[in-house]
Image (cartoon, rainbow, N blue to C red; front, side, top):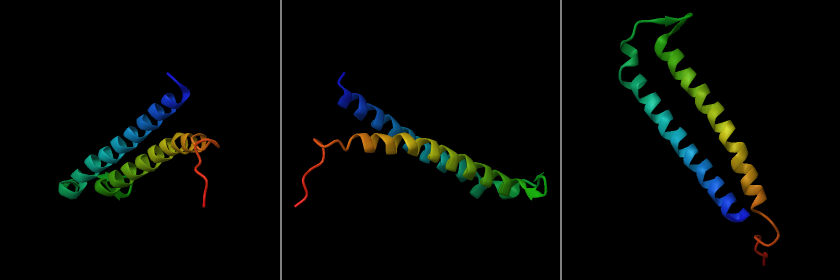
Length: 88
């Protein structure tokens, strides 16, 4: 495989992972909207539903940060002089 094909494959994999992270976040946040209010447990001093939502939120932020670095790096490396179109 050429370097360009490897770069495109790597970018596609990263984008697929970011879409999977989005879908995972949706799936993880749907139950709190439906049933978490019925659970009467406490995590520390916080209700369980609130602690769950914030834990998922932190997980999604960390996952997004981890996925954004390689995606930005692959975008920067694809801007070689032969790939940049001349501006008018």
